[in-house]
Image 1 (cartoon, helix red, strand yellow):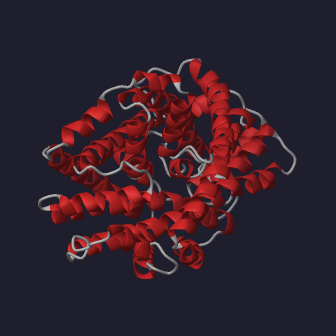
Image 2: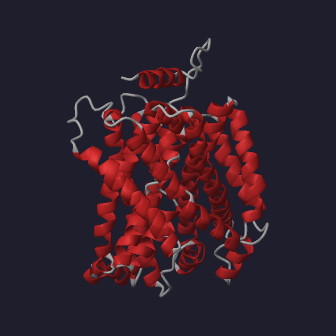
Image 3: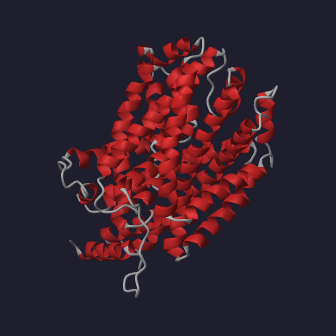
Length: 468
């Protein structure tokens, strides 16, 4: 190893036990206690609104089962390059984007590399905070609907569109918005193993069980078979349309939470003996299962009642709510649905907020509680002004188009190009004692294919006005 690489390795070892190089009395850095807990946390970060209100629409509108072919291709490609890369990068550097980018630049021997790297790492860190602030608004809507379903108010609505418009208006949902933030931050204050890991171990399995229950109920609806036909019968001509491939790429990219922040920072809490290839595979599999479950709920249910398969918040908060109004025992199933939606939103939101929280802890040496408090102030101070559906939609579009894929691109360049050649492969192979080593394909697929594809996501997102 070079002197720079040795220095970074020493600093990474110091970071692993929570101390500055040369500091006295090192403090242990929190980690995921179990491999299963880490995988469930990553699945929780990936499974979110994109699975529920966008994936079913994409499949239905872009070729049915034919859409799944390019989607599976991109999930496989991105899962075995980008997801593995972000997990490995975080674990190798034992810190989030700012610290990881800084250490990568030091390994390259760049003058003032640590400072420059940290400055670049601000992009995905602030992007994660920004998208989380908007996402918290949606969690507030879900909490409102859950309570309305519990007290019967939701089923009594005569105009679901007007009901949603009242909630998604300026300062129209402050109480439930704050409730969502309080629940999320209370879990995060408890830390990684005692907070985020424990909660994901409960919420993620429960999410899948609840959605499976709804899927079984929807299957019994008269007219649901037409929805299954529309969803699952391939329309092969769609594969000749470049738009199908573009949106399949976008769906896979954003659904797998590639952003150079959340997966990277979760990886920084990962023990050295965990197989990240195995973990990435499971994240990709269960994220896809979540999307398919949602599709098997949404499309047949919408067809059964002759409604429109729209995308975005109207699908969940207007169309599906109307479906449950028409369905026998719909009130019970509306409760089940919005419990599952709240769970998915909380697990995703914890991941999004963790990047800025970790940055405040590592870069400013704040305590966990203080770091969460600072992020909470920003989330409330900015988020309350985003409660209008139109405003938060523009906010989320800007961040997802111009910031999130840039963060993923920067992380890829840092890990696969700025770090020494072979470093990424070596880090990805840690914890694979009983498995075959990664082949030569890994370096080519990560350094060239993944980096180029990520750059394409940036360009295509701008050209199409968003692809995920």
